[in-house]
Amino acid sequence: AMNCSGNHPAQVTLYSPAEAKLNFEEKSYVLNRIETASGVQYGNSDITFWNKGIDAMIIRKDGTMTTCTYMPRSGL
Image (cartoon, rainbow, N blue to C red):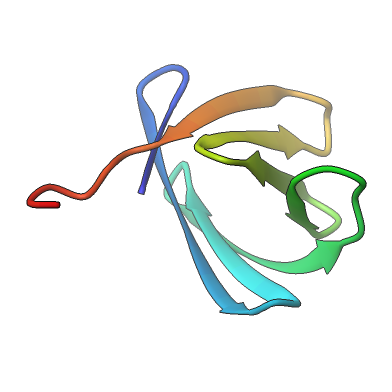
């Protein structure tokens, strides 16, 4: 789970190294892996998700960017 700017929650589920699902703003997006020089990036024609370490960014097709940080699980 992640906390994103604007106090929006987001969650990413990895199905395989090549495919992921992003839940963000009450919508679900199936994403495919995109080659990148740094970090991990998944996307489709509507949205792109990029992360490196605990930091992440969600970029919509209109160019709007939302920054996110992974939240630690409680009890660890």
